[in-house]
Length: 195
Image (cartoon, rainbow, N blue to C red; front, side):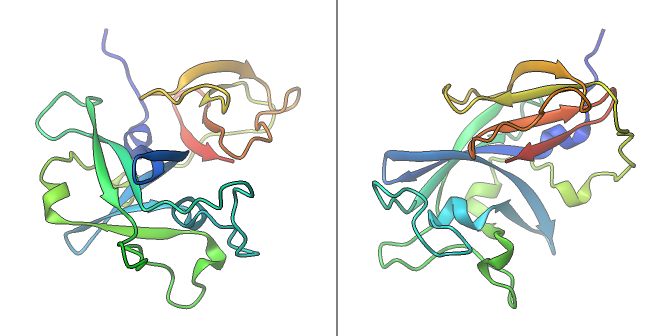
């Protein structure tokens, strides 16, 4: 029997942020398409290594600022779910950034768009979130949900691992770790939550 998954699960791109080859952190992103151009959307604090409200480094010990990331993208021409790593430079040697921010609000909304060049686009099977259908989520207070995620203490796998079943009334669904990713999925629905 074929496995049915929510199409929005296909939009998620796990990313590892690095300074050269030195790992800094892990996060998530998704793709967006506009005017036949593709963008990787993630948080400003992920690519800058800084708090968007204070401009202080997130890591007080290393003051690390990523200059590249590796994203696990769906590979073009293969079975859906077959992912491959794609390296994207987010900062040039001169320090110039390769991402776009909102023209008015800049980093205050903590979101960036990274343009994906044609050399990257040719190998990626895109599932842009803005090209997906937008049916209403059927989430109600007290509904049992399945929580899927990657605990921050473990190495991030290519796909999230099952965590627990919980009821929003009785259990805390969102751990306090900044690097925990959860997929909250009521029956037949789903969305990725980054906290």
